[in-house]
Amino acid sequence: MDEGKKKLISVNILDVITLLKKDKRKLIIYSCVAAAIGVVVALSTPKTYDSSVTLAPEESGAGFSGSISSLASMVGMNMRIGQTGDALYPEIYPDVMSSPDFLVSLFPIKVKTIKGDVSCDYYTYLTKHQKSAITDYPLLAMQYIVSIFSVKNEALEKGKGKDACNTPLWLTKDQYRVVKSLSKGIQCAVDKKTNVITIKVTDQDPLVAALVADSVKQHLQVAITEYKTKKACNDLQYMQRLFEEARSQYDKARQTYAAYADANQEVTLQAYKMKADDLENDMQLKYNIYTQVVEQLQLAKAKVQERTPAFTVIESAAVPLRASSKSRASMVITYLFFGFFLRFGILVWKNRNLFIHI
Image 1 (cartoon, rainbow, N blue to C red):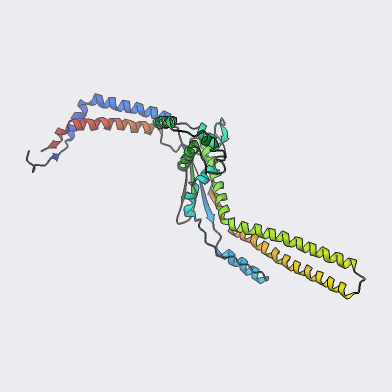
Image 2: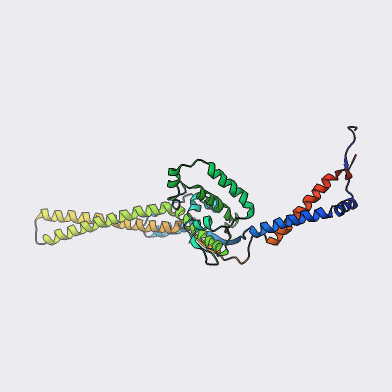
């Protein structure tokens, strides 16, 4: 054969139709077998439901700080609320929700199925009340075989997972698989233009999906609030301790002065008067410190309020009425077409000489 010759592929529709007619029996067999497999897969694949929550964070800006500072300066109070940088922006909320710390905190959530036959914590529900599709069995069998031949440290396994609800530092293999599954079933999207947060939870039970979506919203709000107010809360606790100490010292100085003054009302000696003046001055000093600490305590409370983020719920979690997963009929049709085109591909390959000309 000359090297200069090229292969030309031409397709004649009549030839294709003729081939299909000749191979009609096998085409039907392939399609029916594939459709039957599709029926088995469709019936064994559990339905999934989506429940969503939409939030709009309301961030407090510099205007609030400036207003409080201005009001404080009008009454002689020095309020220094700095514009601290915030490292937790809405854009990284999805990373927060996909972190093991956040996902492990969802384990103790109480859930209940829509039929009412299951009522337990979320971790138990995920490990004992989930259905698997027939297509998942080969992977599950492989994991089981690997677990049989893997070397286990019994002491290590006993210690693992005891505090799983409190920390993700030490998880068992089952808990780790649940965390990986949760990272796929719980999704968070943030609109970069409006900062609107959409939380979507996918589950095999519609009521569980709605309950978890609402709980995820609450956990996210708590996590963001704790992060944003952590320093302000620490400052508030410190000012609270100073307030208790200053009040105690002032009360002690006041009682000491009152007791000394009552006991020496008729004494005219200069030494007693000097002692009374010293006690009065000490009481006044303690009072000045006490009033300053009270002012700073109020400012610390205002700082916590300022740093506390507010979330507006645009759309609450609702029990979905329809499944979000692919319908069983469409799955069967997909398998049917797969069987048809599989046989058609084999047929074209066997008769490729009819379409390739040199």
